[in-house]
Length: 211
Image (cartoon, rainbow, N blue to C red; front, side):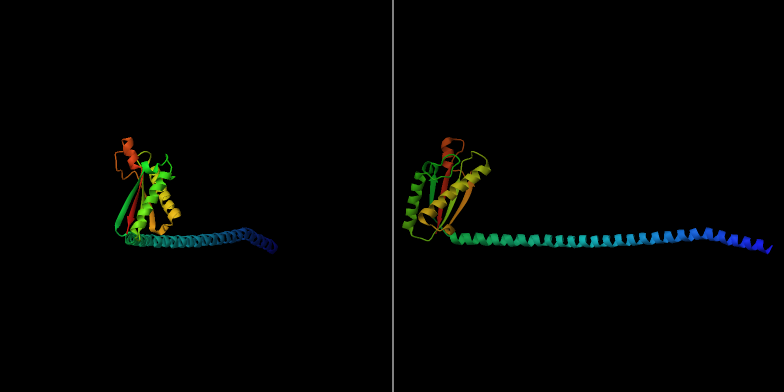
């Protein structure tokens, strides 16, 4: 009888071990997986916080740059104003004007090359300057007729004005810092562009001499 009770007890203990053992192992596995998942979540949270910090720093930098732009704009405007003041001081009073007309210059179509007639005109212009014998500043304006687009006319007027300036510099060594060129394009006509004669008059180079 005792032996049967002992066998029954041992069997009961073995049964308990078989039931409880896997349950404990399963619990440990779940706990381990949960810990690993918690670590991953913590790592992701840390990365998100770092990214948010970098984004905020970037936004702060952009805000700083944005606040500086109006300051730089003001500085550029101030510099532009000073340049205009210097130009005004250099130019002084208008003492002489000369107009190199198309009939004199004989510019070819879409060309800025100076003809012999144009060079002869400029030679006489320089002779007049020598006779004046004054320190001067020369502004050279290029003008065109209304044929063509505004962009083409502005570029052509600039080229013709520069051709005059370079002739005065190379031939007579008039200092470049005492000359400036500007293209007026077709914006300042002196005659009606609807006629051939009017367009011819509008194709010109005007030279303004300041004391």
